[in-house]
Amino acid sequence: MTRLVALAGVAWLGCSSAAAAAPGAKDPCALRLREYDAVRAAAPGRCAADRDCACYSDIRMDNEMHVSDKASAARLQRLADAYRKRGCPTACVQVVPVKCRPACRAGTCKGP
Image 1 (cartoon, rainbow, N blue to C red):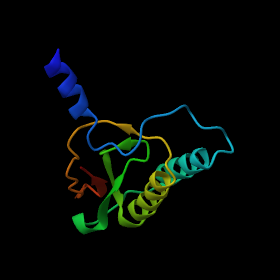
Image 2 (image 1 turned 90 degrees about the vertical axis):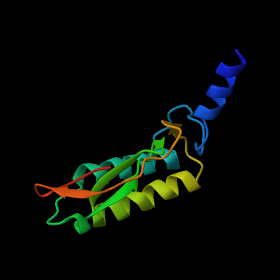
Image 3 (image 1 turned 120 degrees about the vertical axis):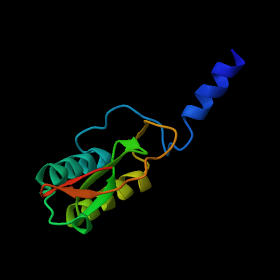
Image 4 (image 1 turned 180 degrees about the horizontal axis):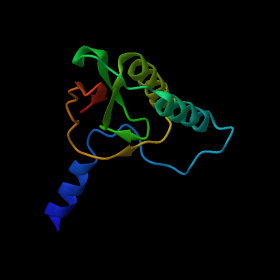
């Protein structure tokens, strides 16, 4: 039993905030989520070489990384950083952060 409790405690290391109830429509966190989702949906993710791609943090889950074209990834990262700075809810999905390695494959940014 002690071992199980210790392992459960380790699983939450690296999380920035606990998950909370879904925010309302006028909530600044909800507005940031909608903006992030719109930018992510519109992100072209196109590339000619690996250097055209970059990593960005998932807005809802700590330690989760995604890859897109550099301009979109920079905008998405700014939104995710502002979301966390405001203290908006996130969920921890893994103990150790994934090392992101963006790559251009057949004209599309892939990773991590």
